[in-house]
Image (cartoon, rainbow, N blue to C red; front, side):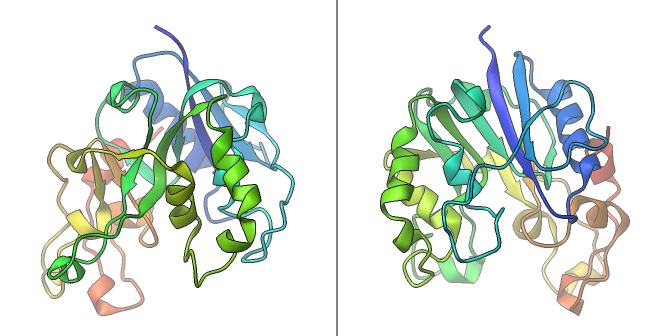
Length: 251
């Protein structure tokens, strides 16, 4: 079986080396085919053996935030980046693997795949979910996706304009052109699918979503907060402990 690529990024202090290491160990448990695990970072301290690394790509001139920032997700699609070739799955560090994920490479081979971004349920009452992806998990073919990178270079002023694209993932969705959403049941949002709505969050603990293979912790809380319980800044963000998260988010 041909090897595949897994790519993640680490900068700053919010997600230290243990997040990378836990993701790597989780993949060793839940990905049956051979894979190269690449962490794009400026600090390889405490990363486990077997984790490949490379430095950040040069700042292309994005002004929304100090470099490095999330727009690196566009730059990794350029031909030759870090010698990547073939099916490549990008993963954020604040993910929990709940089940085997080989299906993420078997699904719609040769096409770009990305999460269909979630919105609050009330916003879907009178309209469809916006045609925007969530870049926590997306797949592209390295060596055949340079058009995504070239679109970014060509339209960088639009990508940098929040009145046109509010997030990097909105521009990535645009630049991907032909794309497929991951099946909804494969990827769950902790905030949308596990955390009880207020005031039930004060008396009910989050439950593991049925059928999900990835659990995405976009924004707050982080996985460690979910396992131990979290007061949150507001009462409707408060969490009772969900110890089952620690059964999966571990070395």
